[in-house]
Length: 158
Image 1 (cartoon, rainbow, N blue to C red):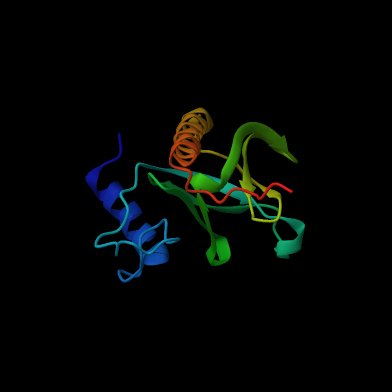
Image 2: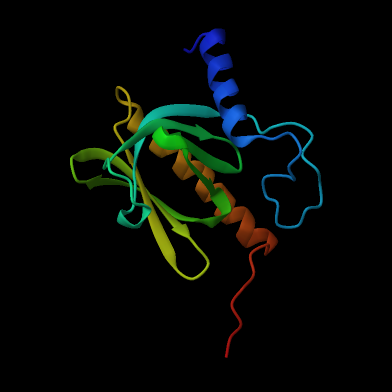
């Protein structure tokens, strides 16, 4: 179990990179409510992001930290690479292998005009399974809520 000092350091890192204190709520689409406090970090994982070729990074892996909240997954890596993937836009979470990463997780994401995949690997110890289960649960709940509330815009039938 992490110590209070470790938890505090992780929270500080998260806030320094992803929270400006004056943002609208994480769902941000409707702007109904002003977020008065930052999202609570459910869990964080040391891991690496495998950038897409179009991102132009020299290194094939950007080591960093994944932060998981109830509404999104955040990643901060070397070179200040930042990703925010909202659960409501995640299509699937799968265990995968890419390059030398045989313990990776693929997050398939709806980018509006199709889908894109994001790969994360090099999880410390055996945390890939824990990360996979948590990400899968949160994305599944978000999809179910979206289906129930009809929040996502449906494509018009011709």
